[in-house]
Image (cartoon, rainbow, N blue to C red; front, side):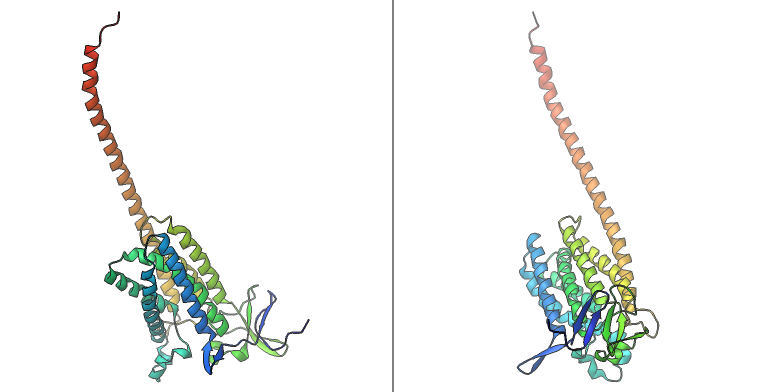
Length: 327
């Protein structure tokens, strides 16, 4: 068997997985194509596939989602960039041209989610569609895209957590990391075979697996939901809960001003609280409506039975008078 050559760039030492010579891009006819972009494109297509499948099963027109996804991509990228720039303003204030340099990195998923939801709401108003039903369907595609899209962080060797000794610990070749990516790490440097590594939480993997769990929950509940909007609320609550935990592990958090408050962690916590509260209120209202409808149906049944009895009773009375006596 031929021995592996090249430097190990990503190493899950405790799992026995070593990946050598990571390349972040490849060239086609002299044009550089980034794996990051390829993975994001694949994630969008996968999300669209899931959304259209859910739409078919719930009696909607899948064509609406083919159109909607185009607008969501455009405004989602803008939202993701704005979110990042706003909370990393010190990196751009002296060089505003870099605000438009998306290829240099700096997109925040929450910005894309916020922009995507607003885009979907406006689209539904224009097309006169059931907004809550569309959000229920679209979020199944969204979480699919998030699940797969996180692997773009893997090939870029970014968005990782702090030092850990957990069995999932991921070692990254420091020579492949930029100064900005490396700056938030406070753990030890581990040297193996002459190569320096940092050993961190693979937060991309945590979020991808968590998103898979949320996706399965949403698909399971789609046919069992009590009201339109319930699946979307479950998405906000489920994703927010996982992101709150994972964001606390990351070393590249966007902070509010010059504080130590991680904006995405605070937003995640707010989404969880709001999602649970609204779900509880809506489920209570739905249960009350169902109970009222059941009482109304029972009252109608009783009234019908009473009316029937009144109609039958005189006839029975008349028949009894004309019945000949027994001999």
